[in-house]
Image (cartoon, rainbow, N blue to C red; front, side, top):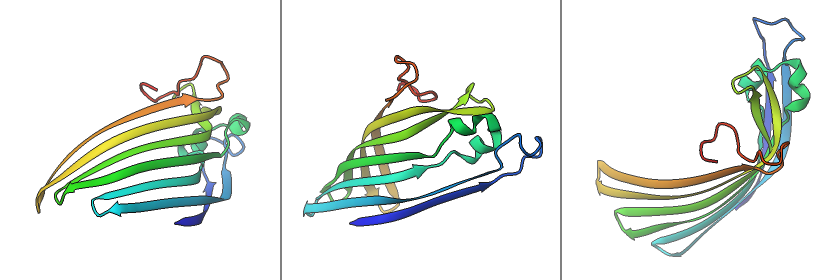
Length: 173
């Protein structure tokens, strides 16, 4: 399955505490982006899937409301390329097992200065990788048991300081 997605955002923000010209009042962007997915079921109990998506991540309204005009050149729209491969196994009619590996490449990571501060800056490109295994047991029609384990690794790819590869606010990255 292939597709083309149009993403658009627009902020028109009013700040009751600061005068106009001291904060970013309007911000907008739009992009066309591809999306591709594939699902193959070689046998009834096994589904294999893969996805590729390019998406846009805008600065959040929180970022914009708290941002000062001095930050405008340091914050930009980020493009994220996501890859995912996985399998769903159904060893019995009442048990599903999902295993997934994914990666997200983000063109622009944003952080507060200082964390929780009023200005924001772009940190550069980042990459997140993860994997998960989920098991669902349909014990009865009204009872389900779920277990899952996941792992995430997040790194800055183009840090301003060579050794500063860890992403702020992401434990264990």
